[in-house]
Figure 1 (tube, rainbow, N blue to C red):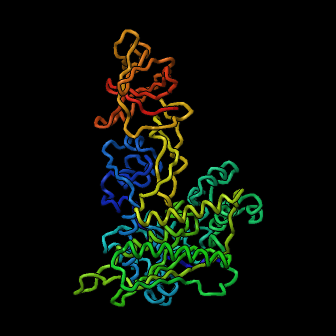
Figure 2 (figure 1 turned 45 degrees about the horizontal axis):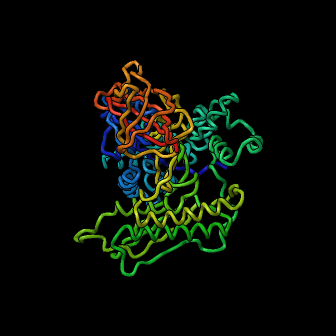
Figure 3 (figure 1 turned 180 degrees about the vertical axis):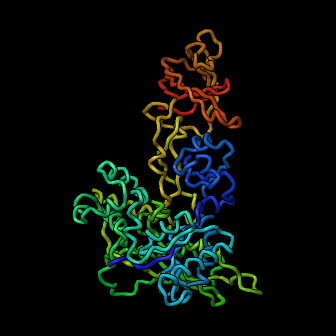
Length: 525
């Protein structure tokens, strides 16, 4: 059975648009020193998604760089979703930059009885509606969300894939479009380079060789939905609702309630052995206006999404989408505001069987879930950046090799830690990294300051260091490890050298010299 007909609206380079830059500006949006999105002008200069920032700036010296702002992406995309909702109310936001609508009813209403002509008419109508709001977009129609998004990404602004023609349409695409890096690395080594070759594999062989996520990818390559429909409807109504009396005037109050509702919904779904890959958010204000929006959390063409595991919206991700939905709500005419929110409802949609997950030994997964729920409550009080988790990334100095990511956000891509990084300090890593390096004086046996030349020649072996009024003899040292960074950018160019020293008090320290000044960057013990 083929997937249902879907129309997808895809706004190219949406992270760039969300930070206020256009396609004609050579610009890139970065996270963890990696390019996550870039404009058309930057691509023309050689910038690519996934590049290290320094490589991107080497290709395009005039590159405008901005940090990624997922919250701004969600808020702004609500404008696009609202425009599409004037054509049909059943708008599903896949992620900021991509939304979808079911084709069947809308095509009949807007295009007539001839199916092929009606779908093309609907596609053009949706595209014109979004462009009139000031946003460039591609619009595609196909069997299933995955193929429809690829159809929207075609070079001519989108296309309509005939019913039943999705497998042939997908066949030439490389396996990288599945958004599974590990699978995209493995399949070519097995001689499988395209979706057509992957789809030709018998489903039973894929099931026996790979895991559940790879089986879903195989279904996508065959033009099917990633997950089969749920075998039965739940016995009870799983909708969760909360009312505000008096009406909630602050968005944060509604967002916090959304987290609590989402936790209740997850518990009810778990009791039914189901999971929800699409959720409806319904908000009603004091004037009686109701706004509904469908939100999906599935990897799709772009690979990983924000807010939790593939195919399941976490409580924090639900709250984030409620915030986006509220931020786009305009006040009614002749009113100073929406009058406050009186009702919030979460409606589970597109239920599928819960495939479960591998439990860790000694109850570790249960403890982790309890910690995540507590962290979500603390974040509601301190803000999204209030609690962070450290993740290893690429870099030379110890402070550059760890990035702190808010709890609930996706960790950096594995590629962020790859690379040789010339001048990188060898393991083991220091125990303490100083946020502000401590000034120190390093002298040789003759009492003269130790210097490092442009060719990394040390003027004299370090004999002693002076820090906080203490003089500590050096008993052993290693180095230098030179680092010449951002040589292509005069304003950000840095030349440093690092040394490891052991002093007579038994301490081991990492020193760095830059511009003739010495600092203690980290302590080993």
